[in-house]
Length: 211
Image (cartoon, rainbow, N blue to C red; front, side):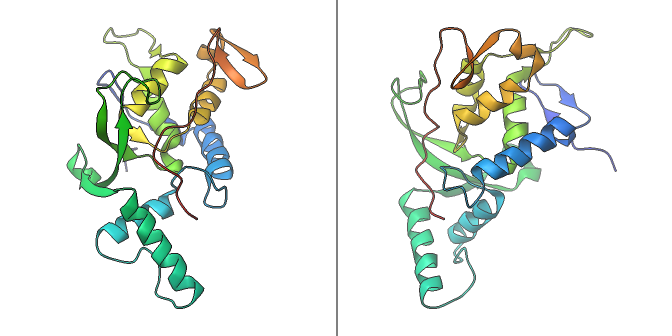
């Protein structure tokens, strides 16, 4: 069975997903430890993503129950609806339905230069962080044999923020710390790996999901 392909920003496909590499597995393990369901962070794991989709499809998002279980179920349903989550179609038919969330945009939102207003962003899943960041960070050259280009931290984060919500800048920084090509242009400080003269910013908008 052939390996799944990953469409890069330059339009090229890789026969093997970078997330299948040892680096990808290590990064995914770090993400689950840092942003898993028990981490109380502004992120969404695959299991929570499925619960959101179930609520939007008219289900409860959790199993039936009473007492405290029913209360948690109601709280989760309220959070899903209060954040404005909605289901939509992905760009590719095989993607099926995708969960989106409305996010404020404008010159002051995450440093982006998008028009001020509300924009629907895809909800990034913790287990997919590596592939998402990689697809935005590495751009294949149109010239055969030429090494792919690596975007800087700011450009990578901006590209992610234009499409996704719930993917923290910290995860992008961690990814760049493991990229040997990028380490040549960066330096370490107490906050991690940064471009010279640039500071880290806050995570993407989207609200704090309940446990």
